[in-house]
Amino acid sequence: MVVMSVYNSGNNDSKLSSTGKQKLLTGLQPSGALHIGNYFGALKPFVELSKQYECMLMVADYHALTSLKNPQELQENIKNVVRDYLAVGIQPDSVIIFQQSQVPEHTELAWIFQTLVTVPFLMQAHAYKDKVAKGLEQNAGLFAYPMLMAADILLYDTDVVPVGEDQRQHLEYAREAAAKFNTAFGETFKEPKELIQKSVAIVPGTDGKKMSKSYGNTIPLFGTKDELTKAVMSIVTDSGGDRPENVYAIHKLFKTESELAALYEANKGSYKALKEALIEDVEILVAPMRTVRNEISDADVKRVLDEGSVKARERAASKMKAVRAKLGISL
Image (cartoon, rainbow, N blue to C red; front, side, top):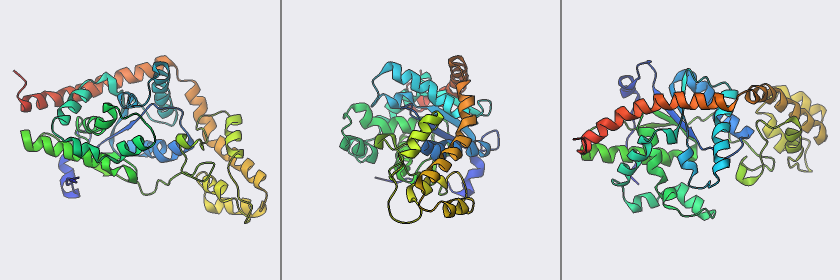
C-alpha cells in the first residue's frame, strides 16, 4: 500500500478552521453497550480533545450495517451512543454530534472513491481480513468499508483523526483516496493526519486480556452497582504473589499507584477486600454519569442528532458541490 504524506507542523497554520482550531473528526459504531475500556480509551480522551479542536462526532450507523441486521437493536444503540457521550460531558453546543445516515453525501462520496481504487488495494485491509477470519460475512459493504470511512473523514476537511496504534491503516486509506482524487481531478481534498495518543493505555478485561465485548470480559460503564459488582468479582486472580495483578491493572486507572500502595500493602492476599475497594472506586466515577445518562430522553437524543446532522450536511453539501464540479457532472 502507498502511504501518502501528511501535513507537517509548518503547514498546519494555514489549515485552521474559522475558530482558529484544527478540525477533528471521530466516529463510533452503535454496536452495543459501552464498558470502562471504551471510557478510558475513547470517551474520556475525546472530552479533553474537544477543548483543543473543532470537533465532529459521528454516529456511524451505516458502518454498523456490515454486521448488525436487527433494526430495533440498531435504533436503540444509536440513541445509547449519544446518551453515553452526553453523559460523560460532551456538550452539543461545542461539538457537532451527527448521524451518518442523515448526511447522504457520505455514501455518494464513498461511491466516487470506489471508482478510483482497485480491488487488490481494498483486499489489503487488515480490518477486513481480521473480521472475515473471525467468521463475519464477506459482504460487499464490509469489503468497501475503507472508502466509506475515507468519505467520512475527507468530506469535512478533517485535519486529525484520533485512532489506536492498530488503526493507522484507516488513515492511510483516507490519504490514498484523497491523493487519487486530487491527482485525477485537481486539488480538492486535504490529507488527514492520525492522532495517536500514547498516554491512552490498553484497558485490561476481567480475564487479563484487552477489554472487549467480543471476549465477554468487560465491566459495564453505565451498569448498576450490582452489575459492576458482578463484573469486578469475576476478575481472574492468580494464586501466587501478594498482589492480584489483574485487579491492580484495572484499579490504577481509577487511582494513582501511590494512592493504591497503602491499600494493597494492607490487604496482601485478601483479594476479596481489594475487589470490593475497586468496586467502590468504579462506582464513585460511574454513578454521577449514570444519573445524568438516565435523565436523557429519546426526544433529547433526537434533537441533538437532528441539529448536529443539519450542520454536518451543510458542510458536506458544500464540499460535494465542489467535487461534482471537478468530476464534470454538474451541468
